[in-house]
Picture: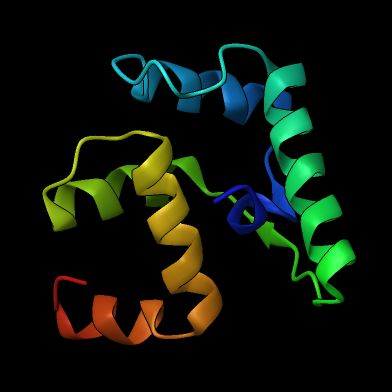
Length: 101
């Protein structure tokens, strides 16, 4: 799971917004430093496995829309799922079609 957060880039201000959205999720990091540690652990796992890391910007507004569209409460697992779909390159096509991932 942690490897899916490798390269996830979010500013401190956007992290604060994410933290509010995911307030009901006890697994969501409460501090920006904890978020950075999660991302770092994921990067370490990818490096150890010899896998490439793709940086991805976390757009909080888009994440909220994605959660609304998929009918999922904003949480760490929802963010993980969005990152996986986005990295797979099928995200925009699904959004264009209005298809629920």
